[in-house]
Amino acid sequence: DTGVSQDPRHKITKRGQNVTFRCDPISEHNRLYWYRQTLGQGPEFLTYFQNEAQLEKSRLLSDRFSAERPKGSFSTLEIQRTEQGDSAMYLCASSSKRGAISGANVLTFGAGSRLTVL
Amino acid sequence: AQKVTQAQTEISVVEKEDVTLDCVYETRDTTYYLFWYKQPPSGELVFLIRRNSFDEQNEISGRYSWNFQKSTSSFNFTITASQVVDSAVYFCALSEAWGAQKLVFGQGTRLTINP
Image 1 (cartoon, rainbow over the protein chains, first blue to last red):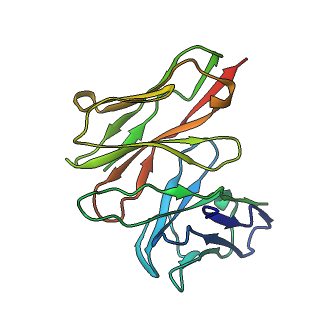
Image 2: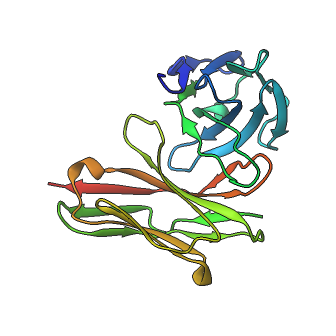
């Protein structure tokens, strides 16, 4: 198992363009998360999937952002009409759902996709 | 709402010194989890420890130790005999016990270990 993979690692785009990031989680993990990290800050939660269902979205996820996980495996995060404020590292993480008694699962993070909007 | 505060933005020490990274959290939940993650220059967050709110025992793993005190809502991390390879940004995080279990991160402490 090679861990969580993200592609591309770096993306530079002009304002107004659309960008798409891909995340391949650990194969046996059924939960997938997207976080955003700006310079000097901790990661902030964006959205979460359990299998193919998107169960929660943060208010940070404006209508220009859309995430999918069509077959419950890889996920894509698309940003339409990018703005300079979208410049950040987009982190994907995955985990397996444990039983209700055992509680919180540990997230395994990918190396991130760094977006620069000019 | 949940919140994590890491008041130390940057710490710089000389190799072999001990260093403690502070973490203070806020939550209304009675059941929750606390985490520490390390982010080296490569960018990938590396899991270090998870602690649930019912387990206040301190933990030691090699040169790393964690002190969880519910009375002060703190979960501090100490590195003993620091090494240059410990240089990274360290994040403390909090999650709810049920549901999405999304992490709420502090802003991180950049630790530099000088040779």
